[in-house]
Length: 248
Image 1 (tube, rainbow, N blue to C red):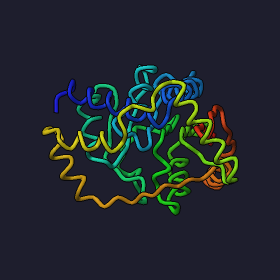
Image 2 (spheres, rainbow, N blue to C red):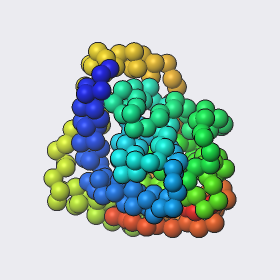
Image 3 (cartoon, rainbow, N blue to C red):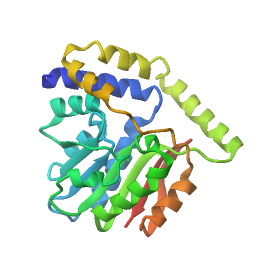
């Protein structure tokens, strides 16, 4: 796949994702703010994107911090094909499954990681794997290194959960993203792209290990502290759309 075609599909992906996350670009910017602050004194920072998909976050970080080495990891061959075809000049992408123990061995990192980031990805992990992924990530980070996770973290109190969702729904209506292409339509269209045929064939062979881990901030905080992070807190929030930061 040529770079222009790949980037067009990723632009369409971003548009589709905004249907569900109206403040997605603001979330990206906030994550970038945290990364920039953490690596302010690093000459050549190392950033790892967990569940990078087609590279939406990783490429934004790479453009904001041109001296950084950015590594993205994912296991979806379709999204990785788009990422590698469109943005290999900015980010090194690795095919590895966070749901499998030992996934970090495939990364071939040049040293300790300064910041690990993720956006709308870790909730797909099986419940029994999220804590292990946090622990494996902590081992990759330098002392003082930081994990920045932007995701929908649902409150376990039913009324608060409902009200958080109402806030996000109202926000989506105000910014006019409710008519954006949906998830299923994007995947159906991408499946008709000849340049992605091989990637879709590979995708069909892989048995996904994921669920929808609808945990709130408190559960994530517990898992992060158990994984070895000393400080955990929220730096940005809109409804249940959260940027959670953990410091090793």
